[in-house]
Length: 491
Image (cartoon, rainbow, N blue to C red; front, side):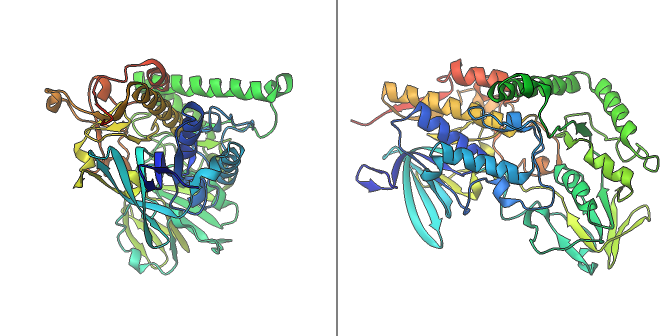
């Protein structure tokens, strides 16, 4: 498998970096909408799946429904909306194989730097292949690398951790050989990973306690495993399409209800939460966040498994600041001591774009944080480069697909008009534009990454994306010239 042009080996029309769900989706859109364009996928790891190939912790599952998290061109066929990690990985791998995308992937190819040449009108990618350096060249580059650092989690300072005599694990690097049967386990954190881990660990452990500094919202989501009446009366392909539409519309309306009527949303969530708690665990302070619903991502638990574990007595929750970790557990500022044989530090992901690769333009390093994203996709002053960034308030793949469709449409227009490059440029008054976060959340991991992430603007083509329906329309029919500067192929 090789691409050749301009006398260079490894020259491709499009290089996609990352073989996770975003990369596979981008590849499908390229090969179906731009069949004459050569492409390859460079994947740093040894398998397809991205997140679902990396994480191995007990109970790993999606925190979005698979009807919208899955590929729109190959809908999720199962009735259960929330699926385990192994099922998702299998789905992604089968899809890549079915459409021949797996034959375009080059594994163990870690991109360490990318450099745009204005003279050559192409990208040079420096790639580490099992310790050896290799170079690839591309007209257009799509970064489907996700949003977090695969090698390093978000660092957390937990006082006294060096005193602990038991085992400490971060979920990102869960060991295969750990036996936690009949152990006392403490999970530090309250995000989606912690919420997923607690009910799974509680099945074998003696006691699992989730320690949270501050509470978040947690919503139970029915997750039927068998066929529904819809699948009995309709063909599977049609019922899956209807399920996708339902899961597009209902969460969309719920999100906007929460943002428009935060007090009513808080009351509603409080009611449904209180009904599921055991009498020994009060709603306050453990389930009373200081922020409004959807100011941080709202966690879900399928069939209320988190609350069921609390009611069983095999799991508990503690809210407060950690005073110190001792040899045999964790002590809070309140004086409460939680015994532990095993501590799981579910303290968050470290945000990282471009897979950690250095981005240069004409050999000059680029400061990503100083730039604004055009339509949430292309970086100011950087030609022929697309970042695949999904949504924080909906399934990631929805945003990824809107990005892929926009890129394909732009590349078609460039080909018809003989343009060799498209680069986002701010207008003369652009420096006055207010900088906004790309992800409209105040979660700790997002706030701590603000100084390293590109920004959104407050108007026009530079505004952040958060509405799939609007973004899909814009990708297919919207303005794709305002804010871009084009260059013709040299003759």
